[in-house]
Image 1: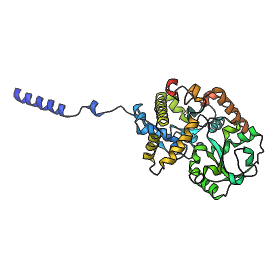
Image 2 (image 1 turned 60 degrees about the vertical axis):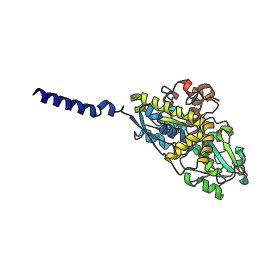
Image 3 (image 1 turned 120 degrees about the horizontal axis):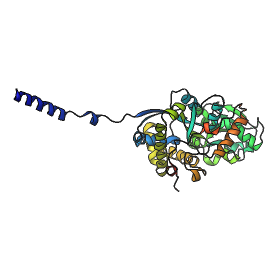
Image 4 (image 1 turned 180 degrees about the vertical axis):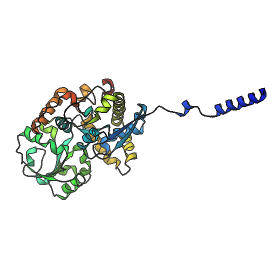
Length: 343
């Protein structure tokens, strides 16, 4: 009996040693985050894919999935609906959204991606369009029906004291915009400046005029990383981790743009790397705009945001003025030293 007991015990011991233990098999559970882009996958958003490819999100205990968007306005409603926890969306549109809501904000900005909105109208020089906004008078300008650059135009018009019907809008979709400009169906079109590289690939840059809204004295914050109220209140650590990982990837993208574009191309193989490198070159000028030298990436000046709120409320005739504290929540930003852009 004793020998049989010993053999049974020995077999159990060998079996236990041979089988992998539970702690060796398991790994910490990752927190899922569904993130919506503002539009399709391009070099504009390459840091998110670099963070994913390099495992930065997993390092923070996150399982991040990234989906294409249908406009920087639509991102807000996607997050508010609860289908997505985070995303990339337009600050001015967020101000409008919050003005129409009551109670606790459903969506907040938690990291300012575009420190300045890359809004621009690109016009054909052979149609008489120069870098002077007054050269747009009487022209035909293409834009999508719901598009943040088009919606922000009244702010430029008011700043320059231009009439409401200064030029004629031609409504088109994003996919057709380049075509109508190239064919000459219109005299110009609204763009995010970095989105216009697709047009630059088809028309010579010297044949086009770029009218940046910032040159009209309209200083607007652009697309920001947004988060749902459920995320910021119930899991702020996950939001903070997402921002740390993304901020780390933004800095990496500035140091090594080719690696960032290569990571993006893994997700979207049809991308032209040369075109996307040029797109990112323009994008990073708006991400690391002049303000970031003082407060770092991702943050805002309260006064500048207050002025933007005033502009949006006044231009769109909103009945409620949202407070900037409800629009931008800096509590989960990475430490200031981590957000410094090194020359």
